[in-house]
Image (cartoon, rainbow, N blue to C red; front, side, top):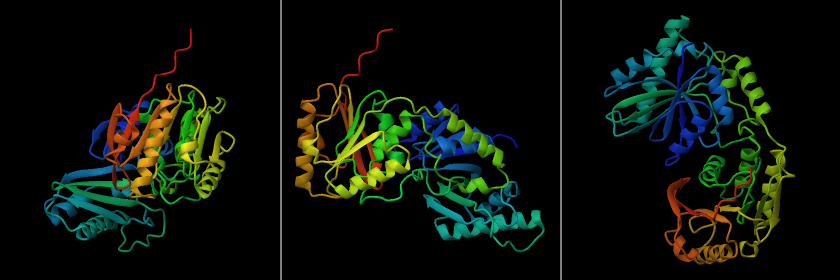
Length: 379
C-alpha cells in the first residue's frame, strides 16, 4: 500500500503543539484549523495512536473534493477505495458536520455518504446486503465552504481516554489538554511540579508519563486493532517500540493537593492504575496552606472557577492566595488556565505570557508567570 494521508485532529489553539509532537516523532506536517496533516504507512497509524499526547484522534484522509450538490457528494464518495479498508461484514456508521456549505443538512449528507459507500462495496463484494457485525469503521463527512473532507477514524474513543482512569471528579481537565499545557510550560522531569488544586491528578499523572517517556496509549485499545487491513504485527511492532522507550529510572518530584478528600481518592486510584502510585505525593490540603518544596519548580493548576465549581468571591480569594504564595517562591514558575478576565488583577501582576484556549467549551486564558530557569550543570 502506498503512503497514506493521515490527520491528527487538534483542539482549537493547540494545532502547533500537535504538529510539534508529530515533528518530534519524525513526521513532516501541514497545519490547518483543527487538524494537522502528515503522511505515513500502516505502522504509523499504530505509532501515532500510541504516542500522541495532545491530539484527539488519528484519521485516514480518504478524499477531499467540491460538493455543492448531493450528486457531487455521492459520486465523490463512491469513487474512493472503501474496499481497501472495510471488509464485507464491517460496521460502517457515518458521522457528519457542515459549516458554510450549501449541503447544510447533516443527516441528509450522512445518508448520501452511507449510500455511496454501500454502492461501492456492493459492486466489489457482489452482494446486496451487509450484516455490519464485524469491526467498526467510523466514516466522517466534514463539509466546509462546499468542500467535502471524507475520513476514516482509526482511534475510536478520543485519545484523552488513556485507560488509567476508572473514576472522574466533577470537573476534570482532559488528559490531552493537560499534556498540552505541560508542553507549553518550561517544566521537565528534573524540576519539581506542584498542583495546589489537583482534583483527579491529571496534570501530575500526565507529567510523570511525559518524564518517563511512557506512551499515553499503551494502556488502551483501538478499533483499528481489529481491522484486517492492519496486520497484528504492525500493532505489535509499535507497542514493543513504546515499551522499549520507557525510561522509569529517573527520580520525580511530583506533588498535588486538593481540599476535597474524594478528589484525592480518585487521583490516588488513577495514579495506581497508571503504575505511578509511588511517584506522586497527594494530600488533602487547602490551596492557601500549600508550601511547595524545592527550587526552580513549576506550579500548574486548573483552579475552580465560577462556571465550574465555585462562586466568584472564592475564585478571587484563591487567585490572590496564588499571587501571595508566588512572592515567597522566587525561583518558581506559575501556570493556570482560567476563564476569569480579572485573573491578573487578583493575582497581583500581569502574566508574562497568555494564550487563548478552550477548556471544553469554556473560553479560557492560559496565564504563564515565568520564573528563572535552573542553572546549567557544569560540563
